[in-house]
Amino acid sequence: MPTETTAYEAPMRRALELALNGPAYGVNPQVGAVLVNDNFEILAEGWHMGAGTDHAEVAALKALAAKGISPVGLTAVVTLEPCNHTGRTGPCALALVEAGVARVVFAVADPGEASARGADTLRAAGIEVVDGVLATEAEEQGRVWLTANRLGRPFVTLKWAASIDGRSAAEDGTSKWISGPESRADTHLRRTQVDAILVGTNTVLVDDPELTARKPNGELFEHQPLRVILGETKIEGNYRIFNDAAETVHYETRSIHGALAELWARGVRHVWVEGGPKVASKFVKMGLFDELLVYQAPMLIGGERTSMRNLGVETMSEAIALEFNEVRLLGNDIFIRATPLKGAN
Image 1: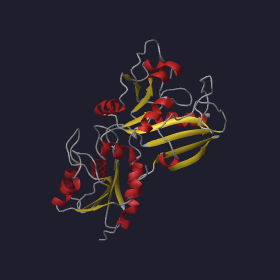
Image 2: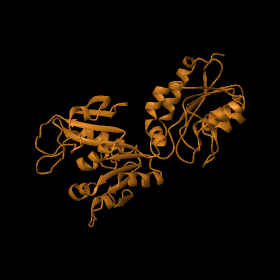
Image 3: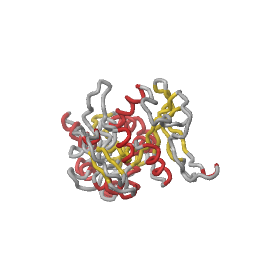
Image 4: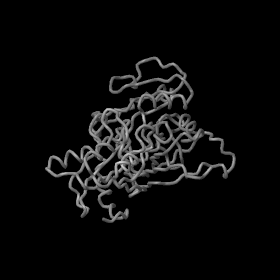
């Protein structure tokens, strides 16, 4: 039986596809699993459908049992190292041991303090373990959950719309609409994949945003992220952010670290920051961002209302270096996804 990682790439690609069927938000990762025989034929599939449901490995084992096929001697191919702890469900590493599989192949190690080291449990039971298969692809796909758990704080995405000359609003403060309808639809869809949307108090007072995830026809998506207001200014009045479409919390503090810690304790693993240049600039200046999403519109505005405020960059050698991960047209706009350049600054 070959153990070269290339032999498992095809079933791992399928497992990565299956993982995307699960919710992108919440405390649990998106995980996919397949069970294959010695000919690398996929006999059963599974994925994690959300907190409290079967993990991907167990779902695949149940799908196999429904077909009347024994798991003994098969290989489990999983996108994430099987978990090693009991939460709302049991440990997947133990489930695979009890099932009698001969081999477990996974892409990325579990960074969780309680859930990690499932591979040790498998090896101790005499099961062969192959790791690192399509690790690069799995790291990219699972970057939000993996980064959050490695850092012990929510993954932070900064999002803004800007003119091609980097302006977020006209001189009178108006900003509707810089981005086009396709960009706005994309924004709302992406909101359904995060745990929380954060803005500063000034954004609430000036723009009165609702901060919900809406379909093009105006209907609300089923999942609505937590709405978070950050800042010491008291907010009184009938602002839309306090309607009953979603839950809202106001952290009356300027401490970004404190707010992120509070959100982590609430189970928030992905924060989407939409709160204007002042708030976004603070996250950047503190190095507390993991990803930028920019919708750049084909227009010139000019003036002083730039997308970023003073970042403390006095000379070009101090500029915050980024890496473009994705650049594409979205309607008439340019969509850019960028991350801090590793090893820079």
